[in-house]
Length: 307
Length: 307
Image (cartoon, each protein chain N blue to C red):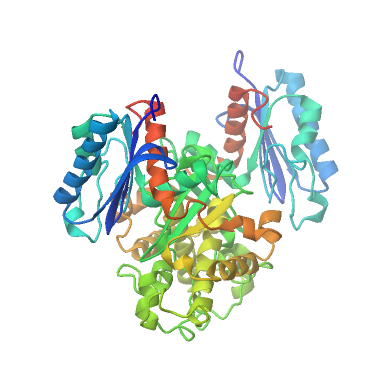
């Protein structure tokens, strides 16, 4: 690592904080995971971890944080760098960025977990060489992040693609949906939480041949189609625990192609959809990779990047 | 106009080509509209119009073309600058950009009609000061364009937001949808074509108190919500002939707020939705304004901008 920059990457999740230091996800000098408990306790552990890294390896030049949300990404906002209206009440308005900044006084890049994963996959994974990238995670919840012309989408807040409304035939699927805000939105119908509530078994417990998976593919296909028609991504990356169920991605590809019905006139969709809708090449490393890429970008652009 | 640059703007539509020359949409020296007939006849008239402008006002420095589509925006593609799979068969693979380029030998910016309208509204209209902008037109068809971080979305092809799948209760609305590709997609349910096919009357003929408009607002609200959750735009601009029906935009605002159910934590959505979902400030001038902005950008970036 001598002579190379040292970056800190934090993947801030609702159940655990994954912290790493190094040059990039393939050249890490230290890595540690902490459970997400109280904000004070969790951030103290994170800070102590990076101090111990600095004692051994020298100054960290920049940090990148990919966080669960919703988060405030609006530069200049009084709550910039905070988690905002999360159901985890103790974490509401926790100024993660400011805490790290006060302690280390270096540039800090900050984005959503899913925008971060899209950044990581662009730099080192399934999105290499592409500018417009969609990353969707299907786990306990459903989230989507995206790059357009190489930059993460922020806009008014940030994407909340898990909450799209999709067609649902309740005579076929009487389950009313599990989303506390919208009932039968995409997340309410197709997240791990919805699967468990509908079938009484988790995604891992359900047999891969269970009819649950045809229904799941129908819903995910509809959601992915809507996002393709809006963002026109060059690649669709599907990550998260639920997507690890055997053959689910094949079913989703088939649904997407059938629903688009040749309307999107690209050989990638029509003839090579297995190269268009793919798993994260970095697997579960996509988030921590996103933190490294955020750190690299904020360092290259100087300390005023995020303000 | 002395000393100012002279730009050419073309709004290429399926029924007419609107051509203008000047510095910007508020400083035009000439403007003319031609019906869309055969590609050869239409483009000959367009070219002759701009030659006559040059004879009177001097050299045109750059052109901007906002076109009906689908179009090929992929720089380096053999069909860059062409309309691709349009149902107007004579126009398929018509190289609009190459035709103009061969004739005038200046930089030419090229984009979809709706990305163009978004660009025009950003520069001179309802999107001023904003970076992430959604423009939707509801007319014979439904189309959506968008800027993210100030740049139009291209990606794999370009957005085709009119074809989103939305929930539809066919016991309430037995109309199967008018889209030849997808049946009851957004355009199939809520375009002017769908209105006419469902009710036997055009949008202009239907009484503004007809129940058609509650159904229309439900469908448009669902489409707009899905796009908001994907793109997180700072402003949603709703143009096109159907949107001119009195009170329709108010109904759509109400549906969007109700469907989002406070999930998007922004005062603009929660408390000031009348400033968030708006008409084009440029009205029917948005498209031609987009052409001027494309010309200005391609001129500022030099002739290699679009290649």
